Length: 113
Image 1 (cartoon, rainbow, N blue to C red):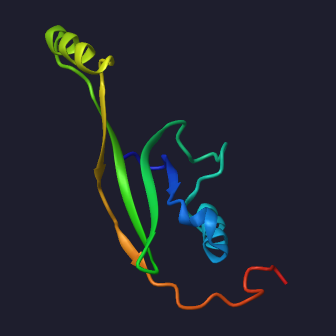
Image 2 (cartoon, rainbow, N blue to C red; image 1 turned 90 degrees about the vertical axis):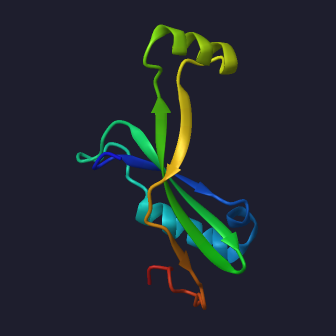
């Protein structure tokens, strides 16, 4: 994982259905997302931050995107024959991971007044 890289933020479908989770989705996007064109951000994405809602808690996981390149021509041929691509892409959990237990969201807390 490179310093300054932008994460891809993924949200569980619950964040689009429930009103209070819509608000938290916007909050997490502002906190963990990197603005495009920021002078210290890198021009590539090498990690994924996933947000899930289960058991009335928000579970956050951080993954690194790994692309395994074949080391020789024979491996490249077999990989392309099996999956149609030369490189295999996978996610590896790198942390930190944490669970948030929302208790209350007060009306007007994020209104900016």
